[in-house]
Image (cartoon, rainbow, N blue to C red; front, side, top):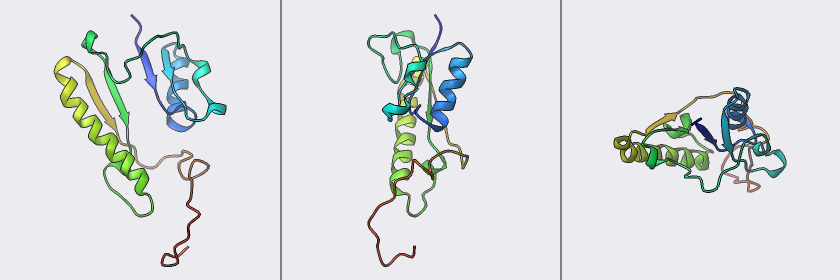
Length: 136
C-alpha cells in the first residue's frame, strides 16, 4: 500500500511547498488549506472516507511530522499568539510521541528558524489598537 501524506496549511508557504514536492514525486496526499481561493486540495487525491488525522494505530506504523518553529522554543515581544500556538504544537507532539511510540509510530518536531515565508508579510495581521506607551 502506498503511503498517504496528510499535510495541513497548504495554501501558502512551507505547507504548499511540501504538498507540491510530494505530488510531483507521484506520491499520494490529502491536504488542507485555510484560504478557499488558494486551496491546494484540488491537486491532491482525496478519495477517502474517514481519515484518522494524527495516526493509524491499526497499522502500528507511520510517522507524524509536526512543524513548529524557533517560536516554540523561545518567545519574543509582540508575537505572543504565534508563540502560544507553537508552544502548543511542541507540547502536543511530545505527549503524542510518548503515547504512540510503543505502537511503532514515530513523531518528529521540525523547528526551523527564519526563512522566507509570508509570515511577516501578507499573512501577518496587525492590531488596529495603538498603545501610546509603545513606540511605533
